[in-house]
Image 1 (cartoon, rainbow, N blue to C red):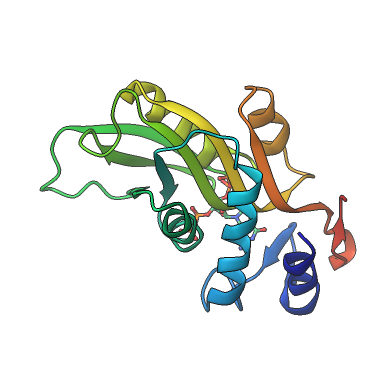
Image 2 (tube, rainbow, N blue to C red; image 1 turned 90 degrees about the horizontal axis):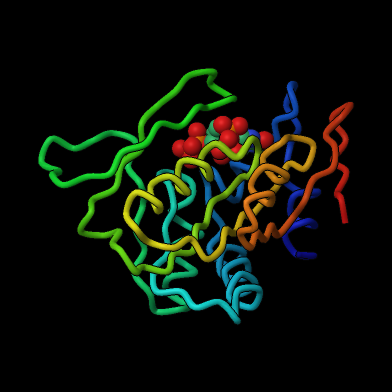
Length: 189
Ligand code: G4P
């Protein structure tokens, strides 16, 4: 998506270790106009998909997910990283964070992810695909169906894209980064 790539070039910053900092418009300060344009693009790309619910993981996935849910007029559920003591009837899975080199649990209530749901997963980054794998597991546990996964930014030099595409699920990324070597941002297409 042209507009996102231009914004990454303008405001994104490379950090050592292949990290792209986009906290000026996605991860900390957020640009709702761009967020809306990105959601419109997801709606276009998943136009032929039968969806009844959007799912994401807190925290950074929530903004793009709710924009998509707003446009499609569908409910948005976010998997929680801390299990609230008041939450019963939950599905839990473990996610390994490559960046933080540790595992954490994500959970969702069975009230909000049910058999028969046709779920679209939206997230900010596709890196190693661990959050995506966790969502695949939660959706399976619920007896629901994952009908697509949409990411704002895919770091194609990490293994998540290949891993998730090998499942056959419809994956869309709005900007695919081929390399951040020498702190130079190179897009794949
Ligand atoms: P994965 O989900 O693709 O496996 O990601 P990985 O374990 O590699 O990364 C863990 C966290 O770091 C995720 O957010 C992911 O979105 C984020 N991340 C990965 N690469 C980058 C990057 O280049 N730039 C930025 N800004 N983030 C990156 P998280 O821990 O779930 O954080 P949050 O959603 O609470 O913000």
